[in-house]
Image: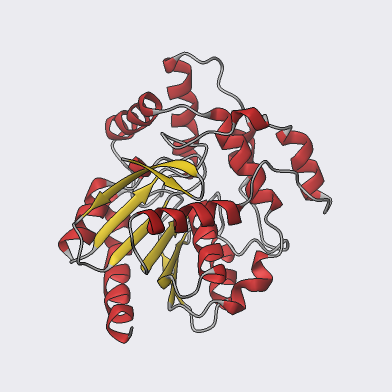
Length: 297
């Protein structure tokens, strides 16, 4: 369903029914709400939670910002590298406000906020700015945004900057599959047919390359978040793979170090994806963590 949240149209999926503690799932860069595996969502519902997912602005079926232009990603990357401000059409705080707007539109006062990658950064912003709304915070394969942290492996960074050979479905599939292979969990390889079908489903649902660029610029423009993490008062769990080639594990360790009382869990062999065995490992930590936070609240 589509809701008006923070003054824009946001596509939302609501599972599990009312009267349950709520889990708000926030996905990462360029990823749609369907990137949360169905088994991941179903396990949370079976554990007694109501699960709310949404397409972040400019991605999937949510409102786009094409009128703002895509911006010059290469030039803005250079500016970021030398410490100059990055210009972006909107901010991660705007995206956190979108997430809060989704909760408002659904009449939800508090939620356990779970974010993956860029979604973890948005979740951090939400917990900083609206502490009473975040029953707990779970940050998965994400970062504090501190400037001294390591970046993507060079081949991964290069792949992210490359454009598909054309806009045919075959070229888009090949480009996406190449990126997915680079960032996949080495200890948990997935069947290529399954991965291909998942990529095809996402491309056919929505293809928004300009939105991906604008979201990348929003990440680059989000300076100073690391210095605010000490304000987070929600119970926090940080999960990160030790084989992540896109957001190295040092980024997750730094996030946990900066948040008072945060728990940190390293997942051996996990890269920057969510194959079924990794989801099982994550949920074995996430569900009891949220249940404990719910009891304390």
